[in-house]
Length: 175
Image (cartoon, rainbow, N blue to C red; front, top):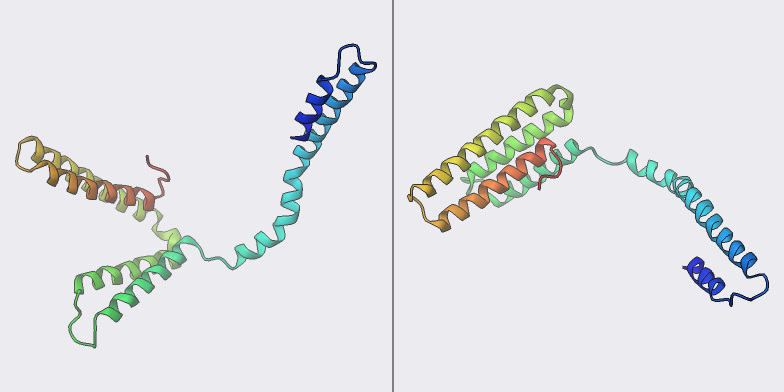
């Protein structure tokens, strides 16, 4: 901002001002030097000052697979607490689903390198299943067997499931 103001002030000098060319050249030189010097050294200064703090934080952070295992365990604990006083669980299928998540995420955390190929196959199969469901849904709508509102409701669910699977598969941003 100061460079722009300095250059504007130098350019506002009358053309017959003594030494106007020298003032313009000096102003432009100072602006160029400060932009180049500060611009080229700012990144180095930031890395130099921030690096020690960032390294210490990284050593204590959990990996993605360890975080997923922790989150799944916490969710399962909450569901089991809601199950009640030791009697029949109120939502046994949901509890079993979360137990399965805990098993899977714990195995991936502990032996992630062994599951890379199997994981990819899993997501390819799951995405194929979602695609088949989407096709069947559209076919039902085209033949007039379902109402528009049903199409939209189930279509949203399938789209969200596809996005979730793509995110978990590591395909990144899917838009």
